[in-house]
Image (cartoon, rainbow, N blue to C red):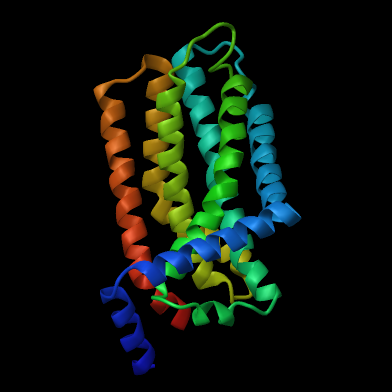
Length: 248
């Protein structure tokens, strides 16, 4: 154990080449598997679509709502769907390794073990961004926040979506590594990850709502700045703690 700790410390202080290669190789491997089997992508997309459909039926679409009300409802529904989809994607990313009997072999990758987290994060992030690219416009149209000739600040919405999705992926990927070996991982992953992701949900919903209703405002800048700080802090902290999660 001490030897492995020393190896990890050495890997962190040495040139970042081995760690970067490990992260990229693991990410490319996961993306190739996702593209070949489409299991994770389809399950994530289906789950997000199901959540949007259920919320659309429950909330009644755009019946008698103002633009501000439609924007809030649409943003809440979209980010709820993406948060749950992120949990599904992160869970599948690690359960596939476990089912193939390759979970322990991840620790044999060269370089610091924190690079394994970054590789898994990139592997989860790719399919989730594709799902978000479909979920965001679909949700906005379904709840009446887009369409009918209404011009929306799509570049700003794209930035907000990217920052929110990165936050979801960063949190769920880390907790996915902790719960993968547990029997009740399907229930434990959301239970552990979602309290940490509440700030991301709030910031993403508020930024999206404000962008739809009022365009770019100082409040939007504040929320997006918060999301950026949360994403960077979560990725750094999870990378540092990931070796200990593997030991657990």
